Length: 255
Image 1 (tube, rainbow, N blue to C red):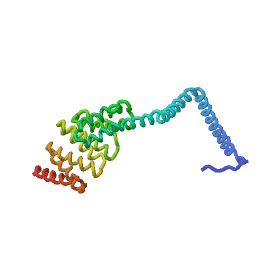
Image 2: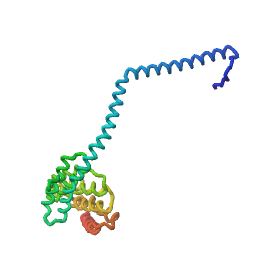
Image 3: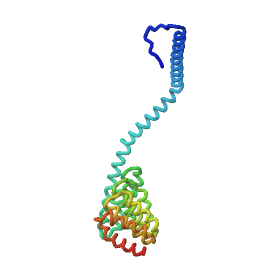
């Protein structure tokens, strides 16, 4: 066990004197090693200071460049894209209630009155939220004009964590695959749409579509599971009555 030695302590015998000499030697060795390490570090820094300063400079330029890009390029670009999208959205909304829809959906895609359509915004404002949202609108416009491959492409390019838009886009891809008689693909997208965000609107809607599609594919157990989820977890959903009917049909097919 180490013992504390007061200042001015004098060794009492030869053994104590030897221990004191060794202790002093060890301490000197430690400080010598520290000095040597520090000297090597200083020498390395001095030797490589140009490289270090270059790296620091590059990092600083990247940070400042990113901040400058956001403030002076991305933000104005985003605002301009949103402004340009207004007319296309107006055409799209008019098409939803108009007796003749195709011409308005086409205007929303290609533009009119000197304003961009959704396709122009996608091409000219890539990387903006407006361009991303334009993919959703374009996909839905193509779906409504029976151009299913184009609808799938744009809806698949649309990315969203929104409670409604994300599932609606996935479900619309399922609708497009149904129209193309690709029911296996449709089922996959309906199930993905139903599970993306659990809510009272999109979840039962796409569970019902998934169940009907699975039933048409002869996947009775899978279909039954989807119908039961609606009847047990979403009793107030508009899809409830249809789910009960299809659940009975699926049960009959199992017997």
